[in-house]
Each structure stands twice: as structure tokens, then as C-alpha cells.
Length: 477
Image (cartoon, rainbow, N blue to C red):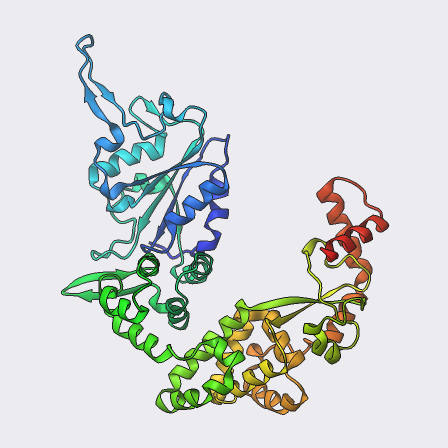
């Protein structure tokens, strides 16, 4: 089959919106093709929920033909055979689905029996099977898995007529990692398991052979491992993985156990807040395996990204005496102020409040601890660290590097940054005064754009006085 650009998992819901619009006829059925366990079913479920639609998830690989077409019904008064349709499908005459709307999700389509595929063919094409018509406010989405042991590509076994009636959407496996990590963080999955996967993202979806059979370790399996441990928290994680992991992540158990053993005494927060207490252990680790230091540097990047707070720098000085910001105020001058912030009012007030990102409880000792750790890295390791910061942390993290690491470390950073290819370097212009002046120079244009956006959002014509008052109210919340 020809090679087309693959869709990212995070874009699937937006793509589905183009195919499924409530109240309108479905033109063609979207067919999601991708490796098992990468989030196809979860994404369709989220789409249905976000659009206030019911979801019926039919795993066709587990279905019989009668689960779709029903069974013959004997009617002595008729000379014709009639079929009794299944109750769990939203046919027009099914009272259970009166005044409802939803998605009939035909999952694992290529893994189904041939008879089931043929029945699905009619359902996909006609939204009907025999005389049974699908409810007009119900829509069909299909999905299939790649990578089975027989080399299935999710399409080969389909007749050309069926392929012609599907909008085939190939999902990029690599795009699933970032989405899954966000999902794992929101669900509160075990931080040590997530840290392992962040440093080895290729293990999130892993294939290996056992006695001639292909085995798949998928994001779904990692989720089950985390959830199962939540039910067995009385068992130390390393012991749990050693005992139970073999049934879920198979050949990755030794590697994960070693990772947990090597990392059980040092966490990114130890580097940030208690470096003096772990310095000797870090030095011993570096002698034992520099890979462990690299792993910790990658964890530090993610910890930094996940634990920054926004500080608004403004022309007001009403809160400058707050103890936790005294050091920051001294560093940047008397116009620094801690404020809560909402995007709708960020750029309205004159002076254009500027966002600065700081670590939780950040002070000079915290920054010195980070510098001490970075000085343990080789030049190439430092390069990778800064590249990860630029990729994953953006302005939030580079703010700290460029603005607050102190003049005593200027030579250290200038030397190392000079070794990094220009494309991977942080923006050298991330200076609070420069950026603020750049924003202020565009103040009239920004204010005009904000006013137009607010007028459009609320359907009225705001005065500048009203906008200023609104901004002040928002900033004080």
C-alpha cells in the first residue's frame, strides 16, 4: 500500500469531528489503523464523552455473526423467514435507544471471523443489516490492529469494496508516547515506572519473540501494571515487579528491576533540594555507570517541567514584601510581583505583565544545587540535557537557566552552550528586560487585538476603561 502521512494520536478527535457531525448524514466511516494498545479505543471513548454521545464498543474479534445480524425467528403465521435483531445495537425500532445519539465502535475489525467482517461490511456501507436500519443519530467508527504475528497490516484481508467505503487513518505509533505520558500523569500512575519509560520511550511499545510467537508489550499493559500495583501497595515496587511483572511486561522485567534498584536512593527532587546529602552517592553512581547520571538528568528535566510556577512581573509594587519573593525582587528590581493569572487578561493592563517561571520553593541554594549536578555531566551529556530542556521545557525552564543562574556561573554556561549546535541552543534573548520591552513596544497592537477578541467573545463593545477594570479584577483573584 502507498505510504501516506500518519496521523498523531492527539489529533484523532479533531479528525473524527470532520466525519461525525450530529444531525448530519455520515458520508463515510473512519477506520483507525494502528498498533494494539496505543489508545485507539480510549480516544474514541473520549470523543464520544466530550460530544455527549453514547458509545457501544463491539470487539468484533470476540463476536459471532449472530451478534450483528440476530437469529431466525419462527413465525407460523408467515411464509417468510424473519430475523430477531440483537438488543444491544441501536436500531431505529429499538426502544432502548429512542431519542439517543452515539457511536457504534467496530473495534478489531481485521481480527474478526470472515462472516463477521461480511456482516460489518453491510453495516458500514448501508448503516443497516437486512431490514434493520441504524438509528439516524448513531454513527460508526471502525478500528483495526497492526503488527499481529501473521504480518497483518490491518487492511490486506479486506475486499477492495470494503476498503473503498472506509476513510483509512493510519496512526503514528511514535506520537502516542507524549499523549500517554500526559494521561499517565493525570491518572497518578507510579512515578518510578513512568520515569523508567520516559528515559526509555521505545519500551512503551515493545515487541519480542518467545518460542516463535510475537509478544507485544503495549501502553495498555504498562497501565495494567501500574493499576495492579496500586492494589498491592503493601508490596515494595521492586519486589512486585520481580514477582508479577513477568506476566505483563515479560522480558523487560530484569531491566526495570535493575533501573528501580539503581534509582531507589536518588530522585530528581533530591538533586534540587538536598544535593549535599546525596553528592557522595551521585559520585559513586558516576563511577559505577554514567548511564545512571544521564537517566537522572532526563528525570531532572521532567521534574523541572512538572514543578514550575508562573510569576507575573508587573509595574505594581504592592506585594514586593512577600517573604518568598524577596530574593527574586532583589534580583530583578522593585517591580516584581507575585500574581495569579488568567490568559484572557494577561496583556490588557498597561505595562503588559510578563510571565516568569520559577521552581517551587526556588532560592539561590536550589539553583546552586542544579549547577553542581550539571557539572557532573560530560560535555555531550550536558548537550543532551540542554536539548531536552529546549524540547520539553521551552520558555518555562530556560527562563531559569538564562535569568537566574547568577553571574558566577556565566562562564560555565557560555562555555557549554558554545559547544551545542546553534539549532539546539536556548534562545539567547530570553532576558526579562529585553522581552518586556519588546512586548511593551507592541502594546497598542496587542491591546487592539485583545479588545477585538473580548468584544467578539462577549458580543459587545467594551470601552478601554471597562477592559482595564476587568483586567485588574482578574489579576487580583
